[in-house]
Image 1 (cartoon, rainbow, N blue to C red):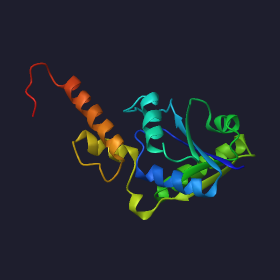
Image 2: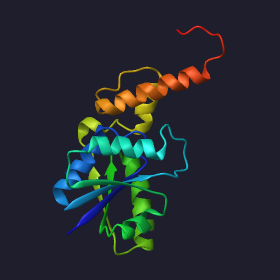
Image 3: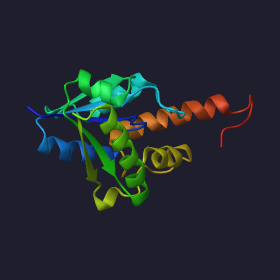
Image 4: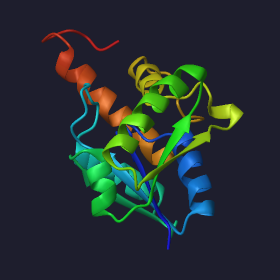
Length: 172
């Protein structure tokens, strides 16, 4: 059995992530989406919320499992007995970053292969950052994320807007 690990922060998961995971599931016996909980960036959702959103997204995919992790990615891959780490490439700048990361991971764990999927053309613009920025400005993200993620984004943005609004100010 060939198990692949698809690591990321998934803050939030979007259709580009889903495309990569589903395509990987066609090639590998099992795909474990590993939601990283300690990135060096600010997150909109907690690790538990992100894991839950990813679980809801793939609840009907029996070849896709979801776990959280906070260790070095290759160490988690070993813990999962994954032979492959899956990554997605959207644009050329992704390639440079992923190439360096693949070389570092290969140095740390030469027994784990890195497989990069080139995104479908319709998702090349899509990133979690883009989704968060559009949602923060009350834009329509329905073509970018599944409905349950869109609803979670609306709830989060509403709560952030209310907590950041000065006391007594009228709602626009």
